[in-house]
Length: 153
Image (cartoon, rainbow, N blue to C red; front, side, top):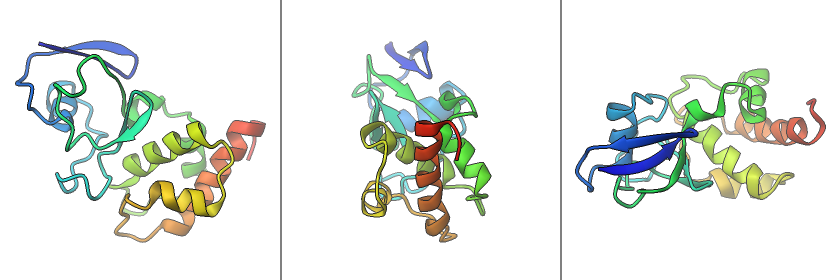
């Protein structure tokens, strides 16, 4: 039995320790906003926060994350400044990578509340968007920073 705090709630998982966190989140906890993309940590579709840091649940085990605080896209509540900016700027095209993009942006803004384009590009460089919405993603991160700082975009 492994204990995690997921999206602010305590969760007990009765799974083998080597179970990828991604599958525990999706299959055992029903958090399907965490997307499976590549399974090797290369695409970023599954990006979530583990103890406040951007992490790839497809390559982290439940055992590694025991007693950790995990936040998925569902844990943002729908009104996070990054989510608001994404909607305002109509960032998503197909949308598959967007939960991971959003979570990477949340982690960035927690560290750097006013990132420049170079910082945004570095923080999200390993999150692949096959539709190529990178300019809108970058603009949304800048807008989210303004929303968080000023309350308005």
